[in-house]
Length: 240
Image 1: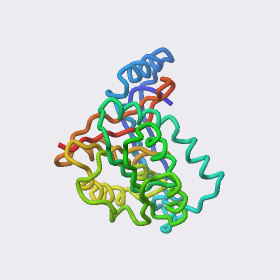
Image 2: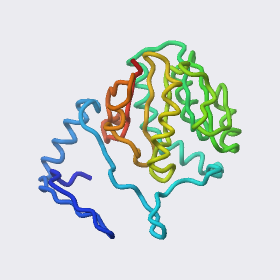
Image 3: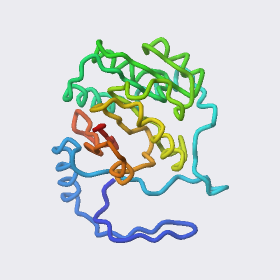
Image 4: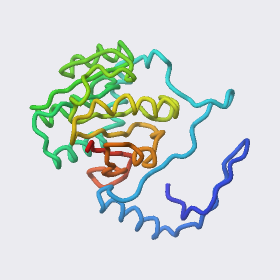
């Protein structure tokens, strides 16, 4: 939802107050049109307020052992990322890396990697997940799968052409954990390779975090649905 031009904010014990100049509907449509026509290379979506538990005031996150998955949950996860997968394929075609190693350190049920494998048959897919159940499910779809915490990547440093980070997100990890996990995963990227950060829920980091990284260049911060109907957070970093 686009409301208007940000002016100021106030954070109190119970709420956040935002002040803005409201846009007319035509201005909102023009702004979205400009972002979409740039294919996501201008602008950024930022979610500055962490989702907190009302009882404790602490950030919401997933259980330490990972999620329990059934067939319906598997389908739901896959459908929720369909547009993101399409945009990923479009981006990968634009950089044209043959026989690429694709690493997903929180591979869930493996649908994401298997979709990319179908688009790039010569690629080698490597998945890893904290949940033993998810790791077992993804073995039917992914070339190589490990069960383990992403804080300890199971692939060697500097071996991945593409690293897909889909879990530095609200309701999955805390903001502090997101920074630690990113630091642990950066060394897995090859020189000139890419690390891509997105997810179902708001990404807990922003371009401010990524621009401060040594040896990585931020290429863009937004993804655009292939059918041009929407935008989403999609950070692409390339190792220099």
